[in-house]
Amino acid sequence: MTPLGLRPHSLLGSLRFRLLAATLLGLSLALVLAGLVLNGLFHEHVLRQFEKSLAQQLTQVTARLSVNAQGQPVVDALALSDPRWQRPLSGLYWQLDELTPGQVQPGVLRSRSLWDTQLVLPPDVLRDGETHAHELPGPGDTRLRVLERTVRPDERLRWRLSVAGDLKDTHEAVAGFQRVLGVSLAALLVLLLAAAWAQVALGLRPLQALHQSLQSVRAGRSPRLQGDFPSEVQPLVSDFNSVLDRNDEVVSRARTQAGNLAHALKTPLTVLAQAAHASEDSGLALLVKEQVQAARRHIDWHLARSRMAATVGLPGQRVPVVSTLQGLVRVMQRVHADRGLSISWDDADAQVQFAGEAQDLQEMLGNVLDNACQWAHSAVRIRVMPWADGVPTGTRDEGPRRCRIDIEDDGPGMSPAQMPQVLQRGVRLDESVPGSGLGLAIVRDLVDVYGGELSLQTPSSGAGLQVTLVLPAAMP
Image (cartoon, one colour):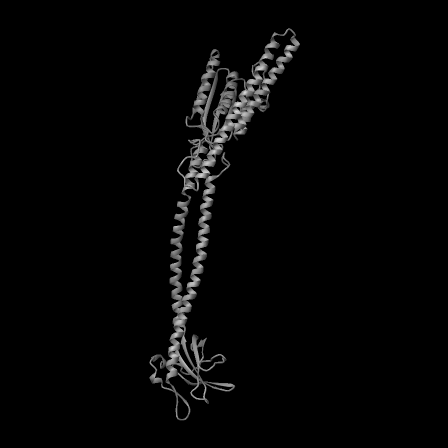
């Protein structure tokens, strides 16, 4: 989770994926439905054309049908124009059935192409002149399309004339069309997906720019969202910047109120302390001094807590760690000039920047550095380095970015049992050394609020104390 409570990159990637997935699903369904409709329409068209051709053949055969002197049906086969009527099993057939009341005598006449087979038509009731179509098996495991019609040369005779054609060519034409249609629809799907991807990419480009601007705010490179955005996105940017401005106003007001409260309370406490110092009643004076000192500790503690709560987590904050430490080192060298302390740098990466408020960083480093200088015999050493997941940075995928600050002194140090105690509020291991016992406790609270780590350990040299701070770092 980012300091702003957002994960813009994940949201953007998810939105792009969902749009492309929805587009792919919609296009696939649309093209499948279109393919089914086109295939059905083409099949119907081919079948109608085939039946139209059979109807012409049926008309031609009907025109060649006559009755001889003996009252028997006759078809002049030589007068038929299509040579397939004469070629056995050619795929084009005709057959004449005699219809008598209650029975059918099939195959009274048939084309030479039927050879020694007959067309077995389903039972059907035909009105005179009406044409019916059927699909049935034919010679050699073929499928035939059959058109049948009743013919009545006189009142006594009633015949059924049938013309059949092999559907093999029709099926091959439909199969070929399906192959071409499938390839065409697949190519169209690819083109439409490419167009959809381009549309999604262009449509989400303003969000990508918003994402980059948000990263700049998060990394502290910019205090506000900046850039040219379309009218649909600009209201969101304006509202977000208004929230940032409001946060700045809240922080500024909190600082002002904290300062006013400190001034209002410390002045009466100073007066009480001076009155106690001038009092002749030593018991009362000692009591007042102790209570004033306790009140000052509480004021310092709660003011620090209120200020850190108001400032932690604000976007766009970045403070150079090394330059902040250099300023504190100069102060400590002047304060402890009479002791001849050596404050040195073992390692200092000037690119490391703290992702937080400058006063908070000065509060943490100042307390730790002042504590080290008070207890050091002769030397204090400082190290500053980038840090990620417990491993110094240097790789591209290094996890959450942090920085590590080590401040080490060569003083008397402390036992492992004492280390947790000094982090508690108001605890002082040596009452002879001036102080309120709040320094490391305030540091611990600040580090916790920023989600960092504070640890105390004995240096590798075996003497003194090393305080390690691991804090969030801004992107360079």
